[in-house]
Length: 408
Image (cartoon, rainbow, N blue to C red; front, side, top):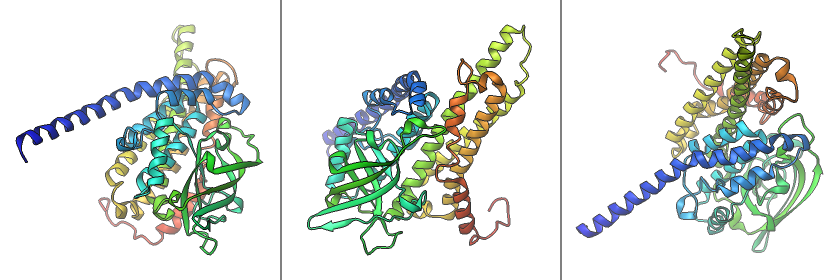
């Protein structure tokens, strides 16, 4: 290689590294700007059980929807840990906004990591980044409920096209999304577990509502049920079997990003508890309020939650390109237990924060209310029910030997 070409390549490399560093440096500021808008409208979103439109206008203005997409396709190519931080910040401001953002990024990750040579999917990602499109998820249907590894509806091949009709028991924010990524049986002859993942844009489908969304918390996710009727072309089907996508991307991204949102909700509740104690100290000449000892518990469980998520994120980042590692019982146990433990710790943290604030926290009004945080975080053990996860993990673990050493 001649010196001139070598110098040119080195200069290009330095420029790319500098550009990426600039993106990462400004990302917290961009995320916080969107989170501030989400916080301003969070109460109204919750009361009306409406989509957080203002938050997503800000998210789109900050161009946060295409963060995971490679630069070659118009995105910023950031890692999962950077997206988890955005989820955490949004979770502190508005649980529904954070959860919608996390769900979108899970779908984006599935496409980015498993699009293969599909030009249709590459075009979709370019359009997503250019127009800041929001993707919804449809993985539950009919009697199967939360069993995302079983599909009733099948892809129908008709000439050069495909079609799908699916009774989705839940499509979070489906009416407000610009596209839907859905599971389906590979064909009408395929077993329910022989699934594919398909990406449709809004022009490809219609939605007819079949159930409403009136819930205790996470009301702004607008997770109604729909009859989904879609049509498209075969190259909108991800070329990798859903079983592999589920194991290598869907589950890890979902559990880590959901967990980050729950941690954000918990952090917001701890912030309320801290403010309550500081106000009480000022008003009582330094006398601690009765619930103050619970602040230590709240802070400790939040730190444990954040530390666990950071450790699991690091483990996934180290192994995310190693299918054998991701398929191992050790990793699958780690990532599923991360979801269980994150949800339980988040609930415990918010509950402790409530004990700190007492009646002021229990009230639905006032500066120290943790009511919305508690209602939102109570959804966390129910999203892919913890009991289902633990039962499945117990069945798998029966095949594994019991360690004979603490270092095994």
